[in-house]
Length: 292
Image 1 (tube, rainbow, N blue to C red):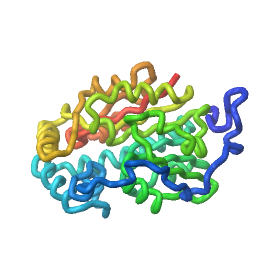
Image 2 (image 1 turned 135 degrees about the vertical axis):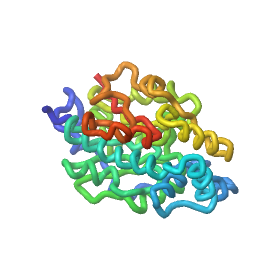
Image 3 (image 1 turned 180 degrees about the vertical axis):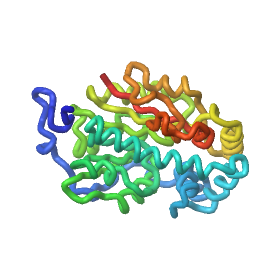
């Protein structure tokens, strides 16, 4: 199989010649969003609630209170969070080994939890990873913890899927070569937006042939308690839009689906090896789409 990082399109610059910042040394760009709103800590953050469910350390009392609301409606929410977190490593391994993609853009990186994306991809060669988030505190925490040592490179960009062009700006291009395949991770992001289809389409148009889109999306298809948890979270002030299998697949229109297409996170890529009942604990669908 051809290595996408060594077989560049005619006229494309060699990846090794592209400018790259020293890992973890970027300054966040000036932005009004760096001035935090007064209720920033008091308001539960989906990223910090997820961090709490995974027994991380980056959360506040408001996040723990929101997690308690979710757990009251779905006592298996921690199990579901572990399935989705475990899927990230599985998806990255597939992309790095079978698709030979070692450039990754993590949209909505949130708070750092091992194994880090650049660590997983770096097992199979030099990794080039850009972590992007619209939350400056989450991004600063990610940068403080997750900078990679050469020869791999990491970058940290204050950017938002609501403005897709910010994800591929000048700073991101110091690490990623968008004329070559890039894997974009949209995990735990799309369910926070009421109608992100056009935004995802814009993002897909920015990527080169051979690129990949990895999506993890909350759903109510798999068990009634997942719907109850989402309704409880919304009632308590945390946005959450569940989507069906067909609605998740619609994000991938025009691209080829890998493996068995859209599957519960606990079953994706496992085929007959998966526990027949494991899907009900997933609470989310996973899919990887490949650009022709």
